[in-house]
Image (cartoon, rainbow, N blue to C red; front, side, top):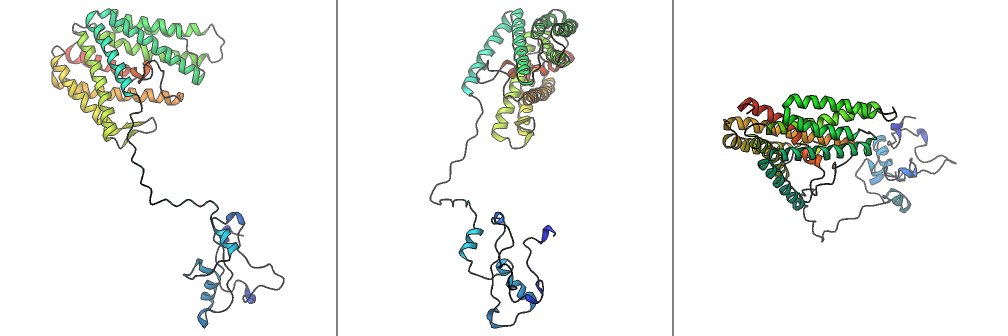
Length: 377
């Protein structure tokens, strides 16, 4: 039997000569459906063969009358048993009109803003003090941040994926990479990067071979992602106006993140990358670009030697793009690992890596554009 025939109305002549009632000995008439389908199908009531309104009806109208109120606007009394079967077993409660509507929910920032602001101000004070007092101290701050970031990244990889990237050669090589970039420039940074990758390969050989490839691949990735990109900050510092270059880099990145957060939180409607970071919006990206370009014009005009405002506009645009991509890249890693934050070291912020996500990919962009605009200094 075709499935489409279930619940279809009987047509005229369907029962042949015995349309006037059921044959003797036949099963009593009733709804042609199973009890478990009661909530989806309304029962077909039994209608006596007495013509309504005392007039003759043709076959089509008789069939319609036999099929009940499913096909005509007729009112019939439904037997209690069938009414109970047709009624939904779990009816939804009717809303109480006397109760007031709940107040609209306010947007939440998702973090402890007071703690985040306090930690941010404290970190900023340490960075600015070390940056303008003794350059070597600031290089040490970068190295410490790199080591802590590597520890957070390798710890999460081991916890969530079972990937054991060797931390010891990464930490030693990462700190050496930052120092080499400050002392010897880009050449020193590349040499230190190569030696760190080699150390990762050799160090992992002391353990069983199972998982060797994924462990060393993650180790080389971590060496490039955290310490190598951070060396460009140390390379900015070597210029005569190095502290102001680093300050420009930090200001533009922070302002880009702040503009994206403020505008997106207040006006954000359209998602930027919902599968990667549902909280980011296109309106937030516009805010990041506008804030970064405005501050970039001011910084290049008043802080950087031989810089002009239009160069600052281009620099701010590039920073907004690289900071957003860096944030999305970090979000991609955390989604793959199934975590919200890389760590809990900084209240209101997460871990060190949660603060470096925008800074790391932005450092080579700012270093390169400043070299192109005003020279290496």
